[in-house]
Amino acid sequence: MFYKSTRNSNENVTASKAIVQGISNDGGLYVPSEFPQITFADLKMLSGKSYVEKAVFVLQKFLDDFTVEEIQSCAQKAYAKGKFSSPEIAPLHKIDEHTFALELWHGPTCAFKDMALQILPHLLTTSAKKQGDNKDILILVATSGDTGKAALEGFKDVAGTKVLVFYPQDGVSALQKAQMVTQEGDNEYVCAIAGNFDDAQTGVKNIFADETMKAQLNAANTKFSSANSINWGRLVPQIVYYIASYCKLIADKEIELGEEINVVVPTGNFGNILAAYYSKKMGLPIHKFICASNANKVLTDFIQTGTYNRNRDFYLTSSPSMDILISSNLERLLYLLSDCDDTLINEWFTSLKETGEYTINDTVKQKLQSDFYGGYCDDQQTKKMIGELFQNHQYVCDTHTAVAFHVYKEYVEKSNDHTKTIIASTASPYKFPNSVLEGLGEPLGDNEFDNSKILEKLTKLPIPNGLKNLDNKKIRFTESVPISDMKKIVLEMIK
Ligand SMILES: *Cc1c(COP(=O)(O)O)cnc(C)c1O
Image (tube, rainbow, N blue to C red; front, side, top):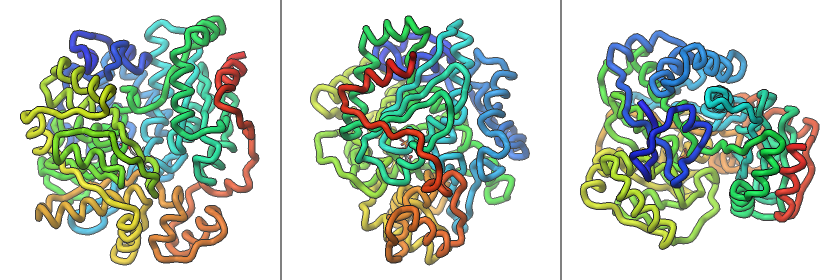
């Protein structure tokens, strides 16, 4: 198999090339030329295996220019004992007879980004070696909170890599900031900028495109790369946990082998839910994909109408990792649903860039609606859901996960579909202690650190190690610069 671009089906690169390059030169995203199949017998066999073994099984099917030993080494380093707070890596929590929360936040930074960013550095360095490239890799990240920390933790002390994170000085929570500025690792640097997230993102994009910067990097035997979810190396590890959770349902005798399940995902950039869809393309029996959005409901509208329109107000919500109006990975889904029609994809995404909208044709729309249901949930409903889940099921969840639970509840009421369902739980409740406490109807303390302690007392769920004592950890990074100084910071990094 090989990888082609969503904007040029004739492009033909290996998995390692796709991972090193990140995005195709034509602006398209890399997609596999075919979907390797997984049989019911495979699923049965895998249900007795460890997470690492399952990961190796799935990854070797896609990364076919890696040796099995290389993949094993990557998976073992990523999901080694002690890195995740659950030996199952991504445990399932049974809510009721039909519903299971797939907890993707047991990694070091307590958000689901760890599932992929723990293994990406190893996939990336292995790929670079295969490409005969001995340059150091400098990962530039602009973050609104979760991705920056997960990238720092994943690349910490990984030989041949450096990470530089820019965050908006007033745009992240106290807890997220504490997580980043106390980061350990000799190959990393964190810098605030005097601007918002968009400024950080634009600054990074400009640096990527700057030819003199590239030349200076080249002279220092270094090249840029990125760690966001358009990279195939971040998407492919996410397929693993959907297959693993299906196997777990079999092992626990919750479903029969071959029985269909539904999957609900709180969605932003469409990476996580696309990975679930890819698992269905491999043969995993999934009936419906329920795409949950917050007040930024561009995807809900798209699934319902077939028109994607980003010309709308942007809201800051209590589920900030889903505050997004351009869901990049949707392009990969539409490429598949249009039977790999790169002309159509070019048309639609050029229109998105130029006018902020596009409308898909009826054939693609019908396919979209037969697999996907879209719904949304505002901040008030999010808090109410957090309270309800705790009251009725003694389960405490974060704001993003609550959005998913709310949309699922609505879906069941509308459809009366009682298929067993997995709901992706994407962050620890301790990442957003203020909103969670409000949801539980509790008065707030003075700051997020105090609120975490109040939440722990109330729920008896222990504060994860990654978020413990952050207020006492040594602060390593205090620099804050004007946007115009971002390049200077990059150059200091490669000295
Ligand atoms: C990134 C993130 C999401 C959105 O995931 P996508 O793959 O971008 O759709 C949802 N919840 C949390 C907590 C996240 O960090």
